[in-house]
Image 1 (cartoon, protein in one colour):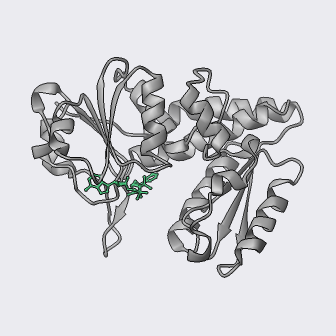
Image 2 (cartoon, rainbow, N blue to C red):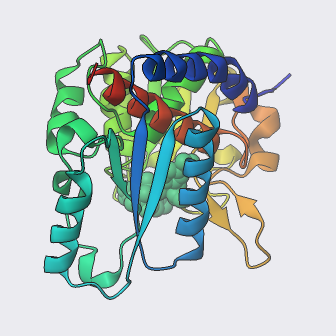
Image 3 (cartoon, rainbow, N blue to C red):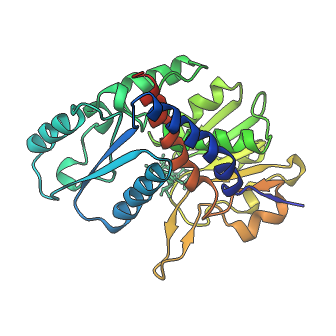
Length: 286
Ligand code: NAD
């Protein structure tokens, strides 16, 4: 029987812990404060930032969303980010992606001081991840961190397992490959130039798909004799507004041991990781 790996029980089980950490911080005079820079009025970004604010405030923390005009110049944008992120009392700062065209080439992680970089995109935090700091004294990219939380919660072993990641983005595939390597997984990082993808997916114990292509992964990629676990990171919206992952859930579900749904799988854990990174940053100021 296929196990469907929902985020909800994980969120419920960790919520109390996070809340009590916030209470401890507050009793020491520190209210964890996340500041989000939102450029323009992209509807999806507005929803994502609102959800982040709701979650942080639900824990008892503070979150402000700073709206920046869509046509801001690069120079003014950099100056604005510098001033917003240097305000006393801010523990975490993030720039909501995507950015408008004139800013899209910017290395956003490095516009933010490493101590406030709760998205784990600053070169220093990325470097700590590569060095394999097992104590996690740095902010790790939120979606990869959420995926590891999910695998641990459902007791899906990582050490020694063949793990095939499809997609090599800086926010998911690359940091995830480092994180799982640090946990002694044997990681293969595939991408659009990979030859014979099926060879890699069929040898994997865990397949993680993050490519932004609806229902891409199908049964012909799988090897049912391996009792595979499928983690679907993709969020794709149809014209009617329905959400689909990068995995053809209905097509593959009977051929695998475990699978995350979309929605309700990896997505909610990204915000959970963000809150964990924020609280860690706030604790460092005590
Ligand atoms: P991206 O869009 O920056 O890059 C896509 C990657 O997929 C590239 O590395 C490319 O080489 C690879 N790729 C594309 N087509 C491929 C193919 N046919 N075969 C093999 N590799 C292929 O990636 P991203 O920003 O990581 O986003 C990927 C998906 O994950 C999107 O749907 C995005 O919305 C979703 N996402 C979800 C969360 C979450 O919280 N659940 C977080 C981040 C991204």
